[in-house]
Amino acid sequence: MKKNVKQDINFLEVSNFCINSRNNEVHVLVDEEGFRYEAHAGVPTRTDSTILYALLAQSQHEGYNPNVRMRLSEIVRMCGMPRTNERYDRIRESLKKWSNTTMEYKGTFYDGKEYKSMFFRYVNQFKEVEGENVVEVQLNDLYLEVVRYSAFFIYLAMPDLVKLKSPIAYKLYGLLAKTFYKRETWQIGAQKLAKKMGIQQPYYSGITRKIEQAVDQINEKTQLELRMTTRKKAKNDGLITFKKIKGYEKNLLELMKHESELESANRKEREARLKEEHDALKKIMDLLSSLSDAEQKDLQQEFINSISSGPNKNHVIYTQYRRHGLQRNCVQAAYHQFIRNKYHKK
Image 1: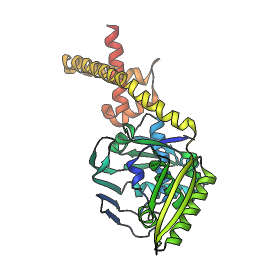
Image 2 (image 1 turned 90 degrees about the vertical axis):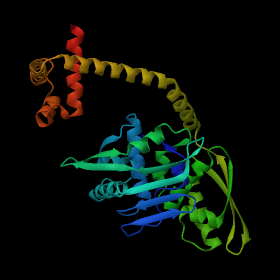
Image 3 (image 1 turned 135 degrees about the horizontal axis):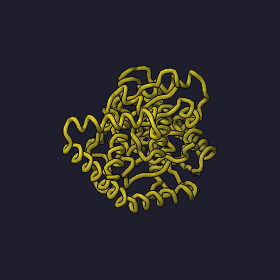
Image 4 (image 1 turned 120 degrees about the horizontal axis):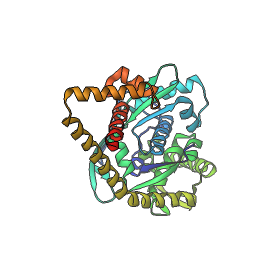
């Protein structure tokens, strides 16, 4: 299992799923602080959130590749779900939800320096490979970019997330992980916390009981250890204080530091590599433009011969070429590499 998943803290401040499952197809939540959440194909729940984290973890494992291809069996394994056809159908339903869910921050998205306006869709599109129980999911580029280059982030432990079966515990875990980013203690009004969490309970005693049960599950199932105290101040309200006894394991903190240092160290290397690729592509375009139509046609035929037969035969690329010509990215990449090799030899 990919053990850790990086997440921007803004996405934990206002959660992208609801504790109470709803049957209505369209749900719109407008927050007075400048946040708008719309779900047009069913409201995501705890299970949907876990599935999205599994896709995000896989994308991060592949260098933030927006095009994630995964077996349904791998997704259910990462999410701690039983491997059944019912769970496979649940993943399909979840992907439909995420492709129809948006979040808008109206001057409330904090990037570590200032507040900005942002609009996100999590999943652009998805499809299932027929007969293979494999899904190809295109995650939103802007969503991935924000998470990848975030200076205001934490790592969440996937093994911890999947153990929290209670939606309230799951949501509280993310909120506390965000809140304990740079502090050890957090105090909040019970009614305010209930509203933030989406707990439909008007009474102080009912709110504190649900939160206590969630804290017990977090302490039992995860690496995060908490102490919770309450103090009633009004008839149906009071203060709830959370104190972190033991945070995440050191390896998580070290991982956060390491990734930050790695991003900084590799930035120049990435820029140099991109420039090198750009220069190489420009040489290819210049070369092609210098050739006549007949010469270009001969060059393409030479490329086709090389992938269809001989020592450099490539059945996959040749099949893609026959179906899509040079329009397919993988075919274009192979064609450009063929030209580079031929040009370099000259």
